[in-house]
Length: 422
Ligand SMILES: Cc1cc2nc3c(=O)[nH]c(=O)nc-3n(C[C@H](O)[C@H](O)[C@H](O)COP(=O)(O)OP(=O)(O)OC[C@H]3O[C@@H](n4cnc5c(N)ncnc54)[C@H](O)[C@@H]3O)c2cc1C
Image 1 (cartoon, protein in one colour):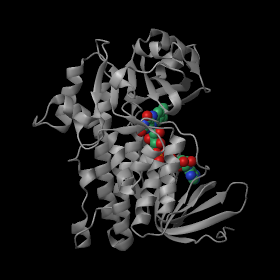
Image 2 (image 1 turned 180 degrees about the vertical axis):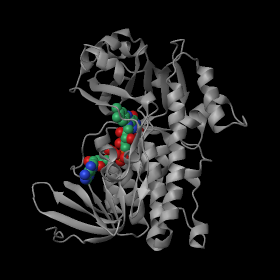
Image 3 (image 1 turned 60 degrees about the horizontal axis):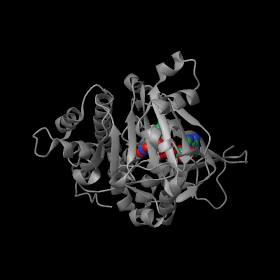
């Protein structure tokens, strides 16, 4: 028999499942607007997570949360751009975020630190956060999700909490979207990654010092992400089908491919491995529906593209910021729920598809730098108002300012002007 938890209210405006970047951003910005929010995560933070290189679009929701200064204060490595060995020439080329607009840098960070920072801010803004709290299932009444049942680590009793809206931000667990939605796998991006960490690497020279290195090879590509205290995260990504045909282990593939690389091999020459191996595979999908009666998803629970271009956290937090504004209006005007969530889902899916389409086309390494620039221009600046290289940077910064997801407006639904500013 579910019970309420001593000392914890059991009625909220919004419940958020998952305290990763998507969940914590949504919750923090809702709490900032004065809503009663419960966040539940099965882990205790700080917790490990892959995804350590961020792009400028991430800075916008972090500015809304008011924590960009804290990232510098914590000493996170600033990321001003990237170095690519990509295309048919194998000649390295660079990009700088400053060329593309609003934010000239983002960060590289251990996700344990970054995710805790965002979650602590959500708490500070008034969100009620329970860690070690695993959501088991939704509470359903008359075909509507009205809450969740969860357990606390080490305790058998199930607890119940209710809300006007439940947000699924449970990442690739897809707690609600798995239950209520089919998923479309993106076959073009059915990939596998193996990664580890190295100390004492040779760093990229001069202005490239804090760049991410992306080095393409015949069958895959490497990331090299400079983290704090000289540690570098290095991962190799290739098609899952290559690995299943191959007798070699992922670690053997990693070592053989490092030997074929140019820039990365040089960086790793003096290095020593500083951690064990990790891997992930087959991660690229879109949920067929992003919402239902009383629930909505955000971040990886809605869709995930691919690590190339490091868009995951930015997309998750941008969508979290947008969803906080939508949910704010739904709590105040419950009658608009269906239409408001439809608008959110359509815009979010469109934004995601734009990024996915670029990533898929960028995977074709038979082309040259100018081709990738013009591809970006076609997508974000068809009237050719800027240099193609600036359009490329704008696209991979994740900031296409004209995109409908970043300019959603519900004023026609609620009958007055909606303040969409945080
Ligand atoms: C190999 C690889 C490399 C990547 N590299 C990058 C990169 O460089 N840059 C980048 O931006 N992105 C990268 N990503 C993507 C990035 O990791 C994700 O997009 C991002 O973490 C999504 O955030 P989220 O908040 O949606 O989900 P998550 O960060 O996964 O958070 C979900 C949270 O939900 C919790 N949860 C799950 N189930 C339950 C439950 N039943 N009850 C309670 N809590 C639950 C989990 O504990 C977790 O804390 C990479 C992904 C992969 C696979």
